[in-house]
Length: 331
Image (cartoon, rainbow, N blue to C red; front, side):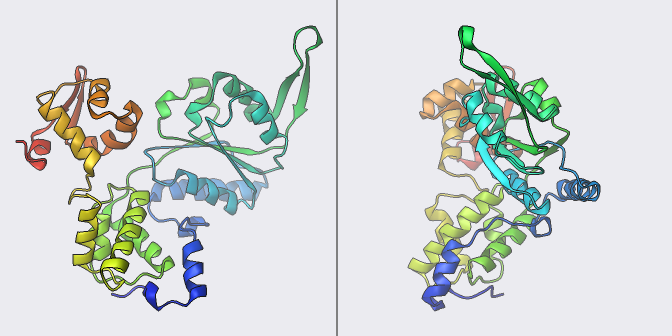
């Protein structure tokens, strides 16, 4: 199977175009995987368009790299609305949100990534904006303080979070639509890689994309990243064409093993086995042993190890399973 053309055969104009290409889908029909979420989104978008009104506020939650930001962009495109983006840590005070809200037009989409990291002050400032489309902004302080009521145009707030449990109940209840994004299957990731290879004009042999998809931890972001790294390896060490041998060597250089574990994952397992005799051990202790942040281990490492049954969470801490011991050679 051949997809597209090799990079070395492109003209300079074609190469520049391939460097600038965006891998994000722009329309719902172009999105692959997440079948249930796509079907619900399609119904919600169609219904809102038929009523000529903005969508309800929606919340996307799930592990990183599954397409929460992409879906927010797709929703804005499908609704013919302007997308305005920000993130929880960037909105430190009410004035930051005020600047965003007063510039929003009717039907526009405001996307806030990592919304669970909003400060309490900003979160409470958003409540009337989400419910009544108005905000009360306090000017000056002390005896000269006065509150100005600003009416807002009807907009759609889309929040994205990797840790939905950290959202306060009042904020979570104000979202009318909540979607959980699941990990992708190998077949779905292979479809995504086919699309990426076509956009990058990359020539691939049969079975190579399945090889990459199987080591991508069910995550499109990782799949696309590995494809780009293998493409670089094929261009420098080979002919620019992806073969099974080139893919295997490229992934080995990236330290990605057959199950998709990287060096940090294996270090996590080795530390738990060698230092803590397989557990149970607290996440803070493991993070200190590895010299990593706790959030990195909880958000990046643990979800996949739990999914494939290499780690157990107990009341006393984390434990490794016999399969994990066998995989790292410390049975």
